[in-house]
Image (spheres, rainbow, N blue to C red):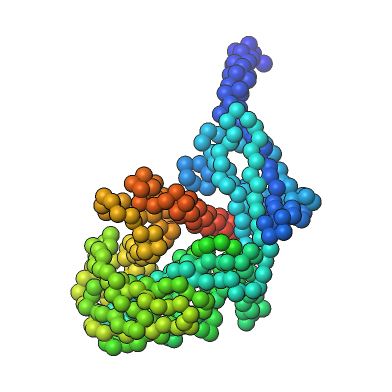
Length: 421
């Protein structure tokens, strides 16, 4: 080896060793530990429960690390990279339900982060289930075809997670099932696909995800089509006790009438369309509701698509599930829940607060940005004195739970893509 090559190699080695501490300093490591506790019994979980440590950078999931519980329900993730501002969360999958820890940053000045997780015993008893909110968004794909989105917000008043309560024809089980109006076709879902999380039944659909104990712990959004003609009646079964139903109808020349419903208000949506909101007067204890639609929809221009609405052609065409309800639904999800929220928590007398963005769980329907906006509105409402601290904490927890549901769906989708390769 000549002298010049030797000197160059020596300089390279020197630079590598001198920069190594800087590289290591940029990527410190921590341990993440905790215990998985059965909230129903108070006992630690058995060994072998699958876990996954999620990491987040800049509000995006950046990593997933698999693990399992030990005999006493404890778990440990070692040498986890913890760059600045990274957040951590542990997910435990028990049965068909996923449970989450708090989301937390790495400890300041420390190298150990504790993230305990709780879960619940499973039951097939659905007597504790009720639909706290149900919203129907009616729109028109053509003068002879309605497209409907339904949003269910489900509560579980028991101390166990509902799983496996529905027997499916193929031998699988689901947690809950919902009946739809006769003639509903082309079902699609915002949180999964048919044959995966959701399964079509003879009368509607079933959801395999467990419903955890608590108020408004589960959300389902389904879309489908129904034939339309002037004077059509829509009869909708109710699968579980339901507290209230709102039907939202764009002002396109069609009106709604029904014994259970009255016109509550008319609002402008974010896409510029005006929407009539029909609220149920007394739905408690009923097993179905019905309403009649009259009028011919005026579809020269679609506010949802910004162009002419086709009046013929296959329903299964490209993006047909989203072009009719896409923009409208994003605004309606926020508005519909906002109406319910303000009815449940009336604003005290005082200065007008029309400029406050109402914090509502259904903002999740418009994506992660919708949840961010709802959280901002929640803070503004608290600062303005429009809600109590207790309601603020309650709504914040629900929004956080819905964000977790989104992240879980993204995580599962990503895992399926990786498995496919």
